[in-house]
Image 1 (cartoon, helix red, strand yellow):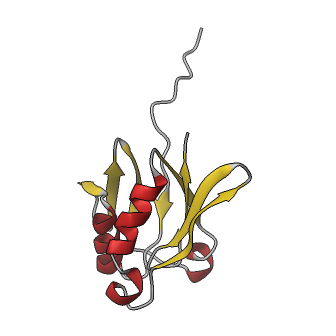
Image 2: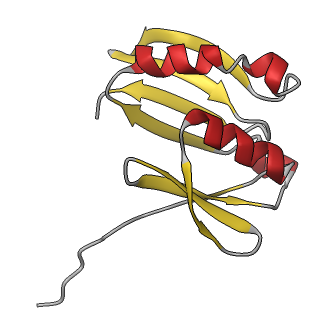
Length: 123
C-alpha cells in the first residue's frame, strides 16, 4: 500500500517592501529559519510560511491566512504594543479587535503589503 502521509504544507506570501515585511513578522514573533535568495522561511511554534521579495498588488490584496492561537488576548496585547499605524507608516493595521464571530474569537490584521491575517483562538 502506498503511503500518502503529509509532513507539511506551506504557502508563499508577497511583500511590497521586503525589509519592512521582514521586520513586521519578526516583531510579531516569527523567526527566520531559512533564506533562499529572494525568500525567507518564517516560523513560530513549528508553523510557518515563505515571505517573498515579490509583489503583485492584486495578489497581495486577495491573500488571506488563518493563524490559530491558544490565547488571542495575549496576541492582541502584543500587537497593540507594536503600535502598527505609527511604526509601519499606516501600512500594517489592526482591522478588528478580538470579537465573537460564528462561535469563535477572531481578530483581523493586515501586514504591510495588504495580506490579511485572520487570527482565531482555538484549533
